[in-house]
Length: 159
Image 1 (cartoon, helix red, strand yellow):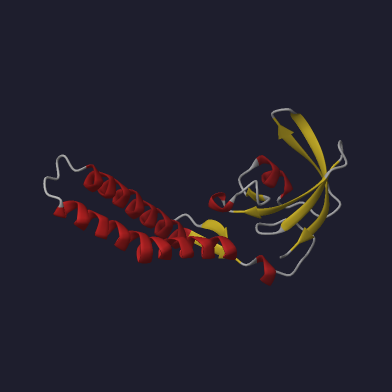
Image 2 (cartoon, rainbow, N blue to C red):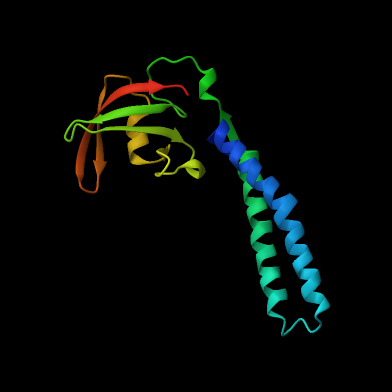
């Protein structure tokens, strides 16, 4: 049985675009580089040939990895789920740090989609795990390496 992995619509689209780029652009470019390197003769001493073959291996492995992830993905379109104020996979949640009065905003996404720079946290992260199932107005305690942190859920958005 295949374990379903949650993924947002945007995350699935990014992976589809990446696999298309790898198949349509990178794969032919590497094949051409291999053919050119072969034309230079002796392959044992040919660094360009070995580099291109190594690159080909990386590209093929990445294509396989992405296709595997997409085949196991359970794509969740949170915009189609009626808002209830409850934190679920895919929502964007605004939380208030009760100690610092700082408001943070994160989207809860699949593991492969997480990006701290883009305020997307993995559903498996300690913060997301403590938020899932809670509702607007709830206070949650998150265990962090620096000690416990208390957050109030300010809003839950289905974007």
